[in-house]
Each structure stands twice: as C-alpha cells, then as structure tokens.
Amino acid sequence: MSVDNQRLMERDLAVLWHPCTQMKDHETLPLIPIRRGEGVWLEDYAGNRYLDAISSWWVNLFGHAHPHINARVKAQIETLEHVILAGFSHEPGVALAERLVAISPPGLDRVFYADNGSAAVEVALKMSFHYWRNSGVEGKHRFITLSNSYHGETLGALAVGDVALYKETYRPLLMEAITVPSPDCYGREAGESCADYSRRMFRHMEWALERHGHEVCAVIVEPLVQCAGAMRMYDPGYLSLLREACDRHGVHLIADEIAVGFGRTGSLFACEQAAITPDFLCLSKGLTGGYLPLSAVLTNNAIYAAFYDDYQNLTAFLHSHSYTGNPLACAAALATLDIFDSEPVLARNRQLAARMAAATAPLQDHPHVAEVRQCGMILAVEMVQRRQGRVPYPWQERRGLTLYRHALTRGALLRPLGSVSYLMPPYVVTEEQIDYLAEVMREGIDQATAE
Image (cartoon, rainbow, N blue to C red; front, side):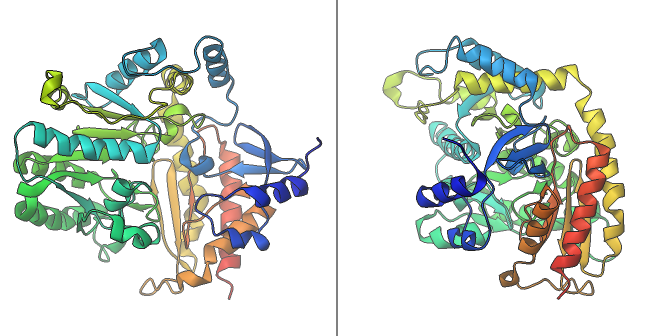
C-alpha cells in the first residue's frame, strides 16, 4: 500500500488517541506523519523536513538513526530480544549497570531497571518508603516536593508533582505530598542573583524538614531545571543545601534526572554541579539515545542491604515490569554511552550552548519576552503580555500554539510549554542550525504576540 500524508492522517485519526493532546485540535491542526529520521531531521511522506529542536520530547541525544546505535541494536536483536530478569540475567543488562555505576556520582552502587521515567519515580518512592519500613523506622510515609515540579503521569509520580494541568483532575486519587515553594529564579528580585535567590528560598525547605522530617521518607527534586514546569531553572547551591539538610533530618534525597541527565545541563549529571550524591538517581529519556523505553534507578549499598534478607521475612522489593532490563534497550544505552566515551560531547556542547545564547540574545529586548534563560543545552524564552510586571498571557489564548504552527511552516519542530518556547536539540545540531532555529523562534514570537 502506498502511503501519503493525507491517507495516513485519516487512518490515524480513525483509531489512535495521542498523548498530551486534545484530539479535537486535529480538526484544524494537521497531524504530521513521519516516514524517516536522520540526524536532527524528521521527514514526512511528502518529503517535507522538520528540524527536531526538542529532541522528540527530550529523548534524542545524538540524532535519529545514528549508525553506531543502529548497529548495536541490530547485533543484539540477532542474539536475544528479551528474557525475564527475575532469576535470569544477560550481558547487556549487566554491562549497562556496571557503566552507570562507574559514571554516576560516587556512592551509587546498585541499579534497578524499569520501563520509563514515571516508572523510575514510582520505584524510587516505593523503595524509599520500604527502606524505612524494613529498617524499623515508624511513621515515615510522606514525601516533600517543590512547587511547579513534574515527575511523571502515573499516580505516585503525579502525587509528588505540582503542575495543575496534569494533576488537578486526578487529585482525589493521589496521596498528599508536602509542597514547598520552588527556588526557580524567575521569581527573584531585581538585582538579586540566581544563587542568592535560590539560597533564600531554601528556608521554606528547611522549615518543612524541621516540621515534617519525622514523617517524611524523601525529598524529590528535578535538579537545576523544572522541565515540564515551563523550563524554570535554579542554582546548584540549592542542591548542596538540600543534601546537607536531608542528612541532618534523616530523609532520603531523590534526584529525578530523567530529563536533565546525560549532558543536558552542561555536566553528565546535573547533580555534579553541586558535587552531591542523591540516595536515589532516576534516569530515562536520553539513556537509550532516544531509541527504546528504558529507565534506571541508582541507589547505594546501604539501602540495598535493608532488603537483603531471608525470604520468609518478606522484606524483598517485589516491584516488577515485564520488560525490565530489556536487552535491546540496554544495547541502545550502551551504544549511547560509547559515544560519550569516544567523542568530546560535553566540550562540544559547551560551544553549542554558547551559540544558543548568542543566537537568542536579541530576544532579551523583545517587548513581549520576560526572560531568556539557559542551563547548558536547554534554553527557554518566556513570552508575556507586558514586560513590566511580567504580566502573563491568559493560558486560554494559547500563544505558544501560534508559534508552533509558524515553526512547522519553516521546517522546525518547536513545541512550546504554554507561553514558553524552548530549544533542547540533539547534540549533533550545528551552529548554523541553531542560528536558524533562533530566527524561526523570533518570527514565531512576533506572530504569537502581534495581537
């Protein structure tokens, strides 16, 4: 059967229900069927190309159809596609765990696999709670989270998130987390540094720990960037204070690096910029270079030991997924780590990040831009109704949708978060392509704010 854009769109809309989408939008907003990908480009069935400026929901690190990752997955599929990981093992799963332990912050000794980012957060939450139970510490059953945080869509992950768009509908189903104000630097006073503001905001966390530490299992944070929370950013000093306070109050620290890990913030892991080691490190998205679903929760031997016991004591961690540690996904992850080992990825990213800053610098003076902010390879531009007082646009106006539509006409995939447009491109993007994306973003902002 020959395939064209229109026919595939019709077939799609007859049977599919898309994620994070009001399907009625597609009465006026055409779907884009993708035939193939190569490098930073996605191509539809009519031959139109789109520069993937958001790494296909932040997962793609080294471009689509990367030859080394392709070869590694192809080789793996010839020998073992999957096997149960309970009572069995396989070389890709062991090798990946060894490498993750070697490259992660010191003291993370054990790897527990899951299928996706939300599942990794569920594992960390359950493992923390279960640790305190196994250790004979009574009363710990709550979690502390930051306002504007996002940790996934499953019920436990939603409960420790704070983006109302995703959470509010399901609130009756969720456990109640303790939410403290975020240290994101958008709220800092004029003349106040991001570092000073983030330190000042830590008083809220300190107060919550002093009051609730006895009943709290863990604090969960997205280090440095609250990605789904409109790419709001904060200073590494907050993480240093948090690590010390968690130790002092006997509370675990969960670092959700699902979106920010593997070089996105300028270091391999965001926690490195604060020189801290969390008790649980959640990884996914870029872990497989954007190829296959896989997540990992790293923790330490002290936590592992609390579950190591005779079976009849019923202390084992029985959480499981059918595709846990899938060999194909592990092979893709190993190939992704090979690229970090063989190429100067982080050094090259610093150059690309500098170009992103330079290319978007003129937007800082745009009459409808409140802030251009950046953390490594993540850059965000916040559109506002008025710069004075940072008056936001009503969310119902969907200004970002106008920008999205314009970018598609210019061959770029820019999917804003509300009124925040951002760049989070694959690391193989060129400086010239960054300049082009900045131009398209400026044009889209002009159109979105024209009325």
